[in-house]
Image (cartoon, rainbow, N blue to C red):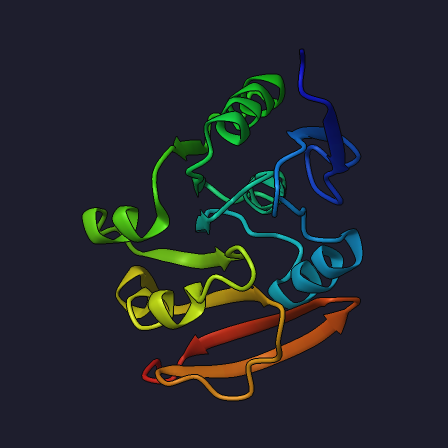
Length: 184
């Protein structure tokens, strides 16, 4: 029996209004349109030439949205095989040559890959205690002056090694734009 699919729309750039498909999987939730619009207003609409990392990418909407807005590269890390198949289909449908798909655990990816990125999107599964494990290792993967975007089920008021630049809340989603506390 085939899995039912859902869709999410890219909000801006080259692929504006294009639909991405994603499977029904427990905990898989695309970043709401309103939240993505706010984030890309914060970052600036044009991400020309930037390198992005989308950890726990799920639907891939953050990485594909960044590519649509001119990012040179979006590395998308997702562990679930069914979600990865949809990511591969969406990459092919969009002809997203800047998308690099990595099917593996996010912590294992960070331990193995030493690249630095201009923007890191971090939207881990809720109530699994991922943020305390991820936040300490991410500064090594962020380029000077880079940004970390975090979604969580709670507000991040203070984070060791991170400065909260902007934050908001939409429904059950708390979203934050961070910079390394040691940058600049």
